[in-house]
Length: 140
Length: 201
Image 1: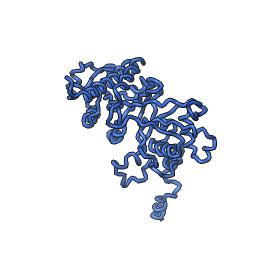
Image 2: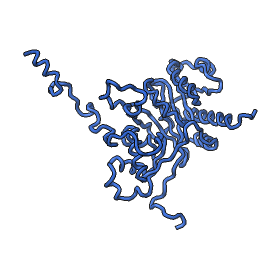
Image 3: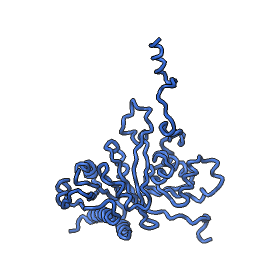
Image 4: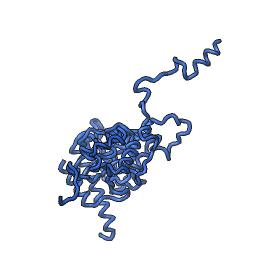
């Protein structure tokens, strides 16, 4: 009898098993559900954290909303006011950077946004730009 | 119309974006430093470990744990409408070092923030940047109550190459942090000039 109850208490359906409530249970939707399980997009290059997302004029079309997910629409709206970097979008949407990369990749494919290419890795920007940065910092 | 088709709204300016990393031990003041000069409250972004750590972390046995995330704090300084500098505080925990490689790509340089009371906390960061030949500047955060040392002493204690800039700073002070950042960019200019004119001098 006692062995029986011990076994039943170990089953996952046992009401006494540890339960998670509210925030403890984690996000209701797992992040990559928003990308339909994809961890990369068809976009050719990996998007840098400081790549700037700029909406195309086509993104103004009100009809677009019907074919896009709410997260896609939110990204377009966030960068319509002021173009934003991938890092800022991730913080603004409270989504992992990896998810934002996939979603932005979709929008690039649909030609609703384009993304600036930051300075290629292992290559410093032009000295003139660096001097402008120094002047800009000094003026702070 | 002279410019062909144009949108109703003014086309936004596409700024050139640059980044500087801020590294150092836990609690040394990285986020404070970013916050002192950033025009936005330091933002937090999270990278999902299950994706970012795929080539590095062995997730065997912990497959269910897909929500582990690592936070990076960052700030922004708009120098001009078309020139924006981002500061990224690197994740402090050693186990997230693989994320540094991505952060370091294309960075102008790095600030290694040090505390003279526990200098050993920044050894790992110094090591990392030295190995990857990423230019860095050591900024000693002058905490109240900490002994002040000459920069030569810090340079010797960290066994730095003589060309690595070392300076004192107050991570809470905007002007002080600005000077640190200017030093990082000046160092980048010096290195660039050296690369461009190897025959000179």
